[in-house]
Length: 486
Ligand SMILES: [Zn+2]
Image 1 (spheres, rainbow, N blue to C red):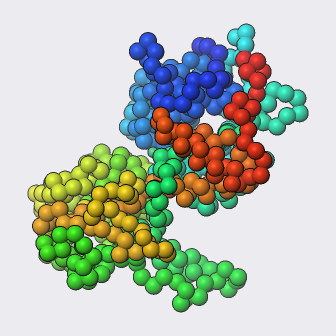
Image 2: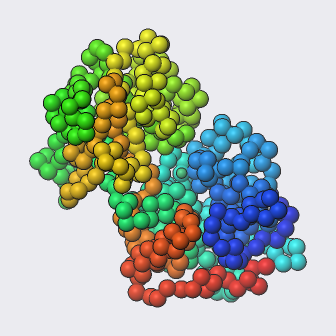
Image 3: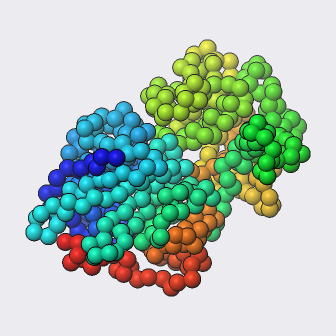
């Protein structure tokens, strides 16, 4: 692919690791871009829009469209060229109205040459080409991992390899991505450490939703279609019914009532799955979500319950239709009466918010009598009393692991341990797996603070050393000498 060039910078780029960890330092009223947001040895920065123009930076990479990552980016942005995935580009244009000539969408899974327009020592252009590959991050639509291959100025030396995860939910399949398999090592892994604490253990998304049986059956059907082979699955071994949240919606009112362990005497059971949405008055399912994210959850609910998806926020509906997911786009409707799954703000999945959603729909001709408010968040884990969904048994997450509670005679709240960040176990799997192959020389946590960060770094180093036999490498040893770079 033809190289693309970022805009010219005003100052040489700094390559040192000396800024320290943290949210950026404050100086002269302006925050300084923290070291882990720079791609070492380049004039590129990642998710660094809240610092004004970063000195020396020419390429501004955006991993995904969440405000804590694009914060500071406005329509007047003119500090350089923005690089991101096609979906993120569409969202930036729709939401922020940034000059479209400043945003370059990079393909997923394809290595692209990007000219580093940074200045070397003496003010001349480095003229170097950085190879960049984007990979799906499994976090929200358009979210990507970014792999940078930075040329080594020493003769006959391999490039420096940096992997920036942005926000991600690590999955075993990440370790099988061909571009990662083909590497000889990763010099620095900039890692989303949001849940890098042993108490953050939550089940996989498909177990929480309870639609793993659908995937398993679809896979089995595909295998059957292409003829029997070693991967053929017997009918008996397939999960027979929905589990998790869908399983809970399906069980009978009596069982459901028994599963509502808290305030049991005040419980008014819901209708069972088949009658849940068609009975009068109907049940509205309000799902909490941020600007983007949780799509997989409400899509699975709508498909399984054979209904559509609505959001009281017309702009949110427009955003959902921008995500390039045809199946999702087909499910979105503008009439609240036609959908039983309503997407609301994350702050609205409580008693008052749920009643508000009910009122909104009924004021427009809806006939809803009650609400199941679903609060999907990793932070549910370790919460208080009945609000907590705990997986205490080994094996698959099931109906019995949910802890719904009655917040109002018309409102049942279901906290769901549904996270779009890696759990502690998944972080261990990802870092240990990459450390085995291709090898990781340094893990740099990108989420944490103060004393907590030290512990996170210790855990990351533990995962890394578990995956390799060679001893840890000192921070500065992973970078070319500064004189080589300036
Ligand atoms: Zn995010």
